[in-house]
Image (cartoon, rainbow over all chains, first blue to last red; front, side, top):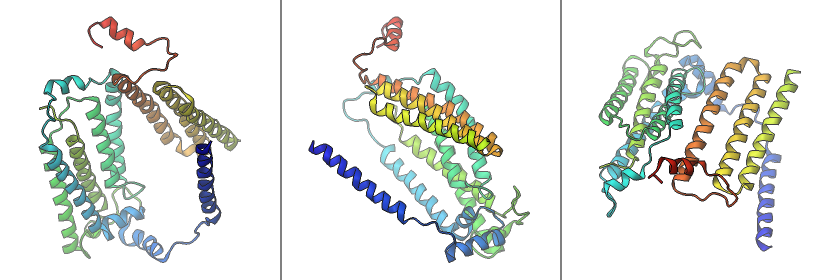
Length: 236
Length: 112
């Protein structure tokens, strides 16, 4: 009885909170001054219809580099913590092997069909980052979800960690190099005007933004894949 | 007219989503809950997206791809979850009469 009363009171108070939110909500019709200047500047200066990607990869490009560095540190520390983990005492290797069941045929067939779809979708997101919603980070996360599906459906699959880390480092280095090229040839670090801006809204446009998007997508995808691989139980 | 058909389809989808939520609350064990959630929400999603396609005929192809994706992923994921639940021996509801997976495994012999 008391419990039900408490639940009813909790629901009523939640309802009050949300009702006050809903009543007090007024749609903002005009942009704030900062947002307005960005909305005006990005298509004009950078030639990118997607204002958010334009901001993330040029004006705030340095922040994006920092975020990717944080992700890299996460991958490295996960490797440090889980890579050298010893087996818990008392569980032999054989227990582990029999514990992990093979995935069923439905899951394997589904993964066969879905992984290419996921990869195509990721490439679409990355390549259209400057035109529509998306960009390198999101596309990289989608790539990692495809890798996760592969790891789940085929437990014996072993991704090549060295290849992943070399690709990831290369993408990161190229990202910084493009940034420095912006410093030398255009207005500043990660300035996208080192390449011609092209026609507004076309696939090849917005200067270096698509290039940066691709590098970011490759880097994030590799990093997240390495993290996922690290979280798998070790066989030996 | 198109908008009316679209609205009705979205409403039907919402009803199926509601029944999915109801099934999650009312069903007796993990497997039946999973079944209620998956079946009803798959059809609900499909109907909502179909209704959207009536609203915006231009989005048709993209919505079709999303429907295909939902139809592929939803049953497979719940299948994997249910199998995993069976693998760690989560009990069936008391009224369960037939356990086909157990029968198959018995027939193969040896394996539990």
